[in-house]
Image (cartoon, rainbow, N blue to C red; front, side, top):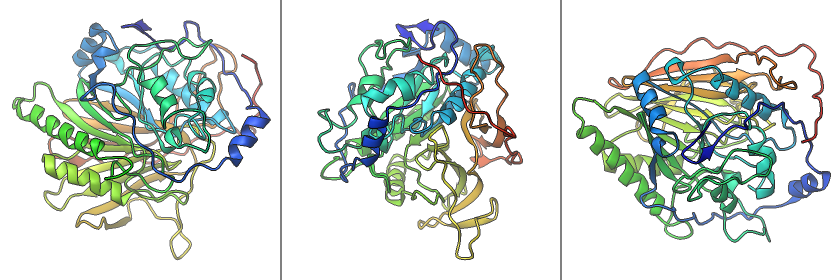
Length: 439
């Protein structure tokens, strides 16, 4: 598909290229120590940094999505296939297959919203072909992204003038241009590292939570500044104003916040970002509106939490989807008795008078989210795949992913529907080593 000056997939379906990073690059990157500082956020290219799906897809496509009565899109984070490419390729193959043979009327995903950590370890430009353009060469749809900490973190003497330059060069260019030789996908034209994407039935606010491995932050009075916090408050207020100006709900828009660091996680390798959550909450209170769904990555597993708000009883789902292909999946923390939490049986206060409940998690399967938004509901499906890609030959059928978890959000009552029972992914009994190919 090539529209509005963009090109997405390569014109001819191609098989996976199994590759190895040069031993020197990998060893060098593994030994690099990043600077333990927060980095300034590049100023948005456009103010306010808001753009519509219609600036990327043609008007006819957007009209078809609206006429279908639903917007379907993919989302996941932490995809960079450093060390071992197979998990990322398996996920990207399954996502590309989920588009093939469908129309918007039959549930074709309109885009992929990436939750950050596109390229490991330090977001270097040199790894974009291998960790981004190659895996998604068959993905025939736009890819939007917020940066993760690995996309913006710097190391001493890194040969770029500012943090996030490679991300900006690939996702925030004024016009779509071909960036990676041998790949057709053009750059994306997001207005900034943080931005709003409007589309039929949805308004997605994408935030950048900076470079810390420990916890996220949206702004401060020194290094980062408060521009992003101001932006969030203003855009939340704009979302509320749009709803108030549409009393008959003729143009319904679910409000989704996407941020790389998770407000809640039980990962043994990562931490919840309570201070960042407090910043988001403050903006929501000032604007007078709460999100219908919050998406995050960073922790390399799937988790779903329900936050029940004391003020009105509304339920907000917080989903962690960091199982997009980074080779090292996280495990859940053990309690004092050496046991893992049981989904549906673990509830605790969030420190602000609300309650947070762990509804589901999966620490064994790579995968992605398939999100369907209509005028009345959001349906979120967590789909799991085998960690071994299957498209070594063009045209080879790809086994459908299994449903790890699914739930719905009622946009009127602000309640969450019952989840589908967890299904374990089937794995090959004896996985064969991948066939290596050159470009």
